[in-house]
Amino acid sequence: MQVIEKLKNYEIILGSASPRRKELLSEMGISFRVEVRSGEEIFPETLDINEVAGYLSREKSKLFEITGIGQNQLVITADTIVVVEDKILGKPCNTEEAKNILRLLSGKVHRVITGVTLLTRKKSHTFSVSTDVFFKQLSEKEIGYYVTHYQPMDKAGAYGIQEWIGHVAIEGINGSYFNVMGLPTHRLWEELSVF
Amino acid sequence: MQVIEKLKNYEIILGSASPRRKELLSEMGISFRVEVRSGEEIFPETLDINEVAGYLSREKSKLFEITGIGQNQLVITADTIVVVEDKILGKPCNTEEAKNILRLLSGKVHRVITGVTLLTRKKSHTFSVSTDVFFKQLSEKEIGYYVTHYQPMDKAGAYGIQEWIGHVAIEGINGSYFNVMGLPTHRLWEELSVF
Image 1 (cartoon, rainbow over the protein chains, first blue to last red):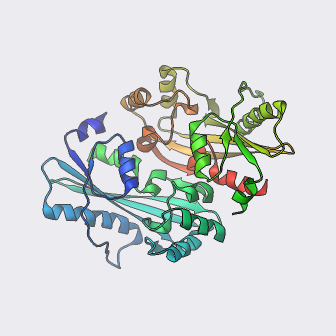
Image 2: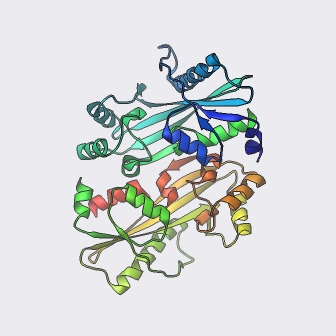
Image 3: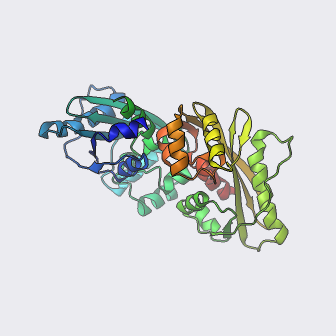
């Protein structure tokens, strides 16, 4: 296929420590290695909320630009944010914060936006994809069960759609499921084919 | 939780050989064993297309009723169909048929309907859930790659949303992702809580 053939010319680097992103990129049939460069996740306060994930993915790619990348390298960086009632929800710092985030999402629709930046020595391209997620009303027992038995801490919005809570509490989504997991695989495939 | 507590009173039997359904029911935190009884999948021609999956799940549960089920047993049976342009697509018999089905789904929206029947000695309850799936235009190379490298044969509609093709070719869905995989987990959780 065009995309797979094209990517053979590059050494693909996934600039993300997320095990979900690693899994998703593998399932796309793409060969790559993971290399993470850490920076602070800061964005201008005046930035439109829909631009934040894309901006942060671009900031992550800049960490590669600074130290320099090889002639044939293609770096993929990404950032996922969860938005409810025009507020961005980050990763929780402790179980109580995780519970509060889940109480906020309960019985509501929220938006998950993943921004992705593709970077080579010659160019960079940023795009982002949004998915609406419909949560049922969660009981305190369900929230407690999830926070105790799973890992909400490393996740924006304090939940993983691929975990127990995604199975029993998400009524449906509108958009890409894999985007909610952390990478808009279909859109990434399309963008790679024209990059 | 209410559901988990309630289900402790039952021996849950999943009446399906599908590895996806087994995986999904496990991820819901439900303990069960698999027991399959085979019958023909036939439905009346006059049946409304939206009723077919529910009807077939009920037919599957009848195979358990006939031979009798234990006092504390709860049997879950399910059937998934793929509908495009008001035609039901079955499982392909060979690779050529698989390719033809994928050509038919290419660039279109189709509907995946999963019907589920809950059965105990005292009662039975059937429900079904529908999800819309948006496929991008597939190239012949992509169709060939998928059919060669994956297993379209055991799947209604000749594809698995959790496989490569689901990652690169599905633009989005409207509804439950797990329903497309073969079990509407959120609705099942709700139905079990009131069964």
